[in-house]
Image (cartoon, rainbow, N blue to C red; front, side):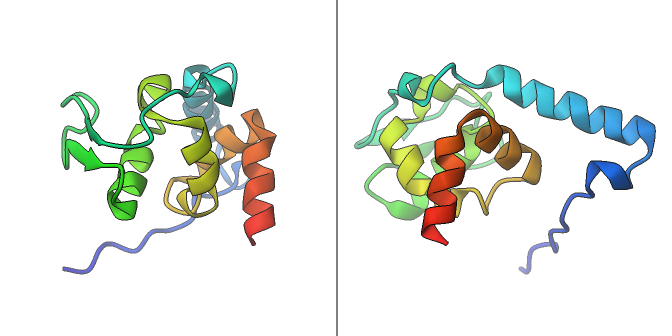
Amino acid sequence: MPSAPQHAAPEPGDLSVPVAEDLALYREKFRLRLPESLDDLRGPAQGVVELPLHIAWSGMTSYDMHNPRQRMGLYRTVLREDLPRYLNHDLLLQLWPVLRTLVGRTVRTVWEDAFPQLASRARAAA
């Protein structure tokens, strides 16, 4: 079954004031969940990771870190959730150039603004 086309989110300058305010609140919500440093990310780099239902409520809950697709799926799922418990600093840096294309613009922007090393990894991979 084909998936619905994904459209780029409008830039804040293209939005009405209420929508722009909502977007700013959405970004702030994600920013507040970020760790102080990428070094705080000490999640597993191998084995099988089981996510609780409050995080993986509509899909897979078990991810094999040796399977590249499952590893990417896990990171895509938890970028907005319990970060230090599930994300690993080295793997996030390794996955970021592709992972950034799989998450929404807000998530990508908030992470790259907070951690410039992610943005530089993306530029280096391009």
